[in-house]
Image 1 (cartoon, rainbow, N blue to C red):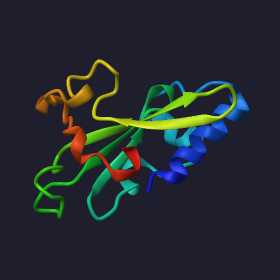
Image 2: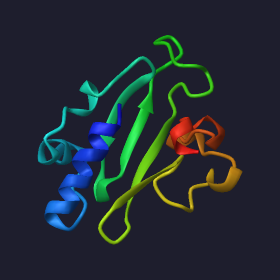
Image 3: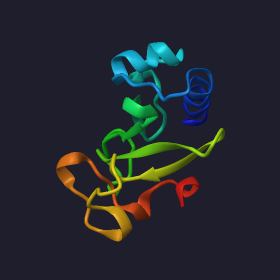
Image 4: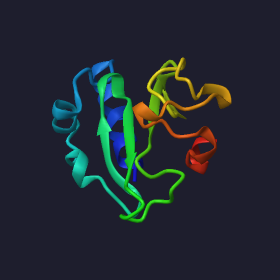
Length: 123
């Protein structure tokens, strides 16, 4: 689901030399991608592109089909400029100092999920 978003962010960076700086309210329009709530799937509630090209993926509730380990949790897709090419990594928080980094305990107040439940493409 996130591949189209990653492509749009990488193309924006290629054209402008920077990641989209705004909030999800403006970034989706600037990138020409669907609104956050329209980016959903079996387990994904929505995807929001936030500042600096970071995208937050939100999961649905158990009642809506998400497993209890990820229900109401979220993770981040974080782009990095590697001198002309963009690489992506996942984190359970927006910043590297997130409490879940390197196996720490996720903060339930910020919807952080345990790193072991990140998608396999993140590992």
